[in-house]
Amino acid sequence: MWSLGGLFTVKLDHAASQGQLAVLEAVVSRAAEPPLHIHHREDEAWYVLDGHINFHVAQQVIEAKTGSFVFAPMGIPHAFTVEAEPTRVLVFATPSGFEGFVRDLGVPADGEDEPPDLTVPGPEILGPVGDRYGIEVIGPPLRLGE
Image 1: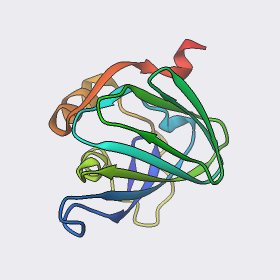
Image 2: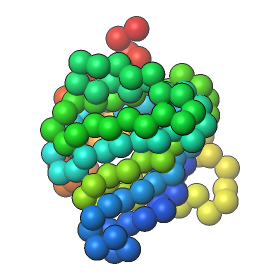
Image 3: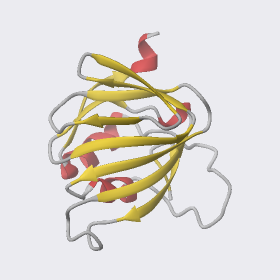
Image 4: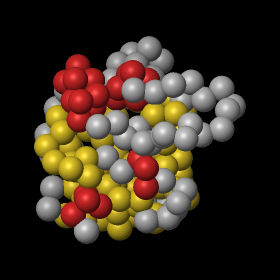
Protein backbone atom coordinates (compact mmCIF):
# COMPACT_ATOMS: atom_id res chain seq x y z
CA MET A 1 0.00 0.00 0.00
CA TRP A 2 1.03 3.60 -0.49
CA SER A 3 1.29 5.14 2.97
CA LEU A 4 3.33 7.58 5.05
CA GLY A 5 5.25 8.77 1.98
CA GLY A 6 6.35 5.30 0.83
CA LEU A 7 5.36 1.93 -0.54
CA PHE A 8 4.69 -0.60 2.23
CA THR A 9 4.22 -4.36 1.93
CA VAL A 10 3.06 -6.19 5.06
CA LYS A 11 5.12 -9.37 5.44
CA LEU A 12 3.78 -10.44 8.87
CA ASP A 13 0.78 -8.99 10.67
CA HIS A 14 -1.12 -9.22 13.95
CA ALA A 15 -3.20 -12.24 12.92
CA ALA A 16 -0.29 -14.29 11.57
CA SER A 17 1.94 -13.59 14.58
CA GLN A 18 -0.78 -13.84 17.27
CA GLY A 19 -0.10 -10.19 18.05
CA GLN A 20 3.59 -10.63 18.71
CA LEU A 21 5.30 -9.05 15.69
CA ALA A 22 4.68 -6.97 12.58
CA VAL A 23 7.15 -6.97 9.69
CA LEU A 24 6.79 -4.59 6.77
CA GLU A 25 8.98 -3.90 3.77
CA ALA A 26 9.10 -0.21 2.90
CA VAL A 27 10.50 1.62 -0.10
CA VAL A 28 11.00 5.23 0.97
CA SER A 29 12.23 8.57 -0.25
CA ARG A 30 12.52 11.92 1.50
CA ALA A 31 8.71 12.19 1.26
CA ALA A 32 8.56 9.46 3.94
CA GLU A 33 10.58 11.32 6.58
CA PRO A 34 8.43 11.30 9.71
CA PRO A 35 8.13 13.95 12.38
CA LEU A 36 9.89 13.27 15.67
CA HIS A 37 7.65 10.80 17.48
CA ILE A 38 7.32 8.20 20.23
CA HIS A 39 5.73 4.74 20.08
CA HIS A 40 4.04 4.05 23.40
CA ARG A 41 2.93 0.48 22.58
CA GLU A 42 5.75 -1.17 20.62
CA ASP A 43 9.48 -1.35 20.07
CA GLU A 44 10.49 -0.55 16.49
CA ALA A 45 13.50 -1.70 14.50
CA TRP A 46 14.76 -1.42 10.93
CA TYR A 47 17.03 -3.47 8.70
CA VAL A 48 18.27 -1.55 5.66
CA LEU A 49 18.04 -3.81 2.61
CA ASP A 50 19.35 -1.21 0.17
CA GLY A 51 20.11 2.47 0.59
CA HIS A 52 20.99 4.87 3.38
CA ILE A 53 18.95 6.35 6.24
CA ASN A 54 20.11 8.38 9.23
CA PHE A 55 18.12 7.39 12.31
CA HIS A 56 17.84 9.75 15.26
CA VAL A 57 17.04 7.67 18.35
CA ALA A 58 16.98 9.67 21.58
CA GLN A 59 20.15 11.80 21.37
CA GLN A 60 22.01 9.38 19.09
CA VAL A 61 22.38 9.68 15.30
CA ILE A 62 22.88 6.31 13.63
CA GLU A 63 24.05 6.22 10.03
CA ALA A 64 22.40 3.14 8.53
CA LYS A 65 23.53 1.94 5.13
CA THR A 66 22.78 -1.36 3.39
CA GLY A 67 23.02 -4.20 5.92
CA SER A 68 22.54 -2.01 9.01
CA PHE A 69 20.13 -2.82 11.84
CA VAL A 70 18.73 -0.10 14.12
CA PHE A 71 16.54 -0.48 17.22
CA ALA A 72 14.30 2.10 18.94
CA PRO A 73 12.75 0.93 22.22
CA MET A 74 9.19 1.99 22.97
CA GLY A 75 8.95 5.31 24.76
CA ILE A 76 12.08 6.75 23.09
CA PRO A 77 11.78 9.73 20.69
CA HIS A 78 12.96 8.93 17.17
CA ALA A 79 12.79 9.96 13.52
CA PHE A 80 14.86 9.48 10.39
CA THR A 81 16.12 11.18 7.27
CA VAL A 82 16.45 9.36 3.95
CA GLU A 83 19.92 9.95 2.52
CA ALA A 84 19.62 7.77 -0.63
CA GLU A 85 16.46 7.63 -2.73
CA PRO A 86 14.91 5.20 -2.82
CA THR A 87 15.90 3.23 0.26
CA ARG A 88 14.41 -0.20 0.92
CA VAL A 89 14.05 -1.24 4.55
CA LEU A 90 12.39 -3.92 6.67
CA VAL A 91 10.42 -2.43 9.56
CA PHE A 92 9.84 -4.58 12.66
CA ALA A 93 7.36 -3.70 15.43
CA THR A 94 6.80 -5.76 18.54
CA PRO A 95 4.16 -6.34 19.62
CA SER A 96 2.25 -5.97 16.36
CA GLY A 97 -0.09 -3.07 15.66
CA PHE A 98 2.07 -0.69 13.63
CA GLU A 99 0.84 -2.35 10.43
CA GLY A 100 -2.68 -1.13 11.30
CA PHE A 101 -1.39 2.43 11.57
CA VAL A 102 0.19 2.11 8.10
CA ARG A 103 -3.02 0.61 6.68
CA ASP A 104 -5.26 3.29 8.19
CA LEU A 105 -3.18 6.03 6.56
CA GLY A 106 -2.67 4.24 3.24
CA VAL A 107 -4.32 3.36 -0.02
CA PRO A 108 -3.93 0.08 -1.91
CA ALA A 109 -1.03 0.09 -4.39
CA ASP A 110 -2.56 -2.52 -6.72
CA GLY A 111 0.44 -2.27 -9.05
CA GLU A 112 -0.30 1.36 -9.85
CA ASP A 113 2.19 4.20 -10.01
CA GLU A 114 3.05 6.27 -6.97
CA PRO A 115 0.34 8.82 -6.14
CA PRO A 116 1.46 12.37 -6.99
CA ASP A 117 0.72 13.64 -3.47
CA LEU A 118 2.48 10.84 -1.57
CA THR A 119 3.89 12.24 1.67
CA VAL A 120 3.63 11.86 5.44
CA PRO A 121 0.28 13.42 6.42
CA GLY A 122 0.18 16.64 8.40
CA PRO A 123 -0.59 16.77 12.12
CA GLU A 124 -4.34 17.20 11.56
CA ILE A 125 -4.47 13.67 10.08
CA LEU A 126 -1.42 12.02 11.65
CA GLY A 127 -2.30 13.08 15.22
CA PRO A 128 -5.73 11.44 15.56
CA VAL A 129 -4.65 8.23 13.81
CA GLY A 130 -1.47 8.14 15.89
CA ASP A 131 -3.56 8.51 19.06
CA ARG A 132 -5.47 5.32 18.17
CA TYR A 133 -2.17 3.42 17.89
CA GLY A 134 -0.22 4.96 20.78
CA ILE A 135 2.05 6.99 18.49
CA GLU A 136 2.69 10.53 19.71
CA VAL A 137 4.12 13.23 17.46
CA ILE A 138 6.41 15.45 19.54
CA GLY A 139 8.19 17.54 16.91
CA PRO A 140 8.54 18.36 13.23
CA PRO A 141 10.38 16.27 10.64
CA LEU A 142 14.12 16.61 11.21
CA ARG A 143 14.95 18.03 7.77
CA LEU A 144 12.83 21.11 8.55
CA GLY A 145 15.55 22.17 10.98
CA GLU A 146 18.29 22.24 8.32
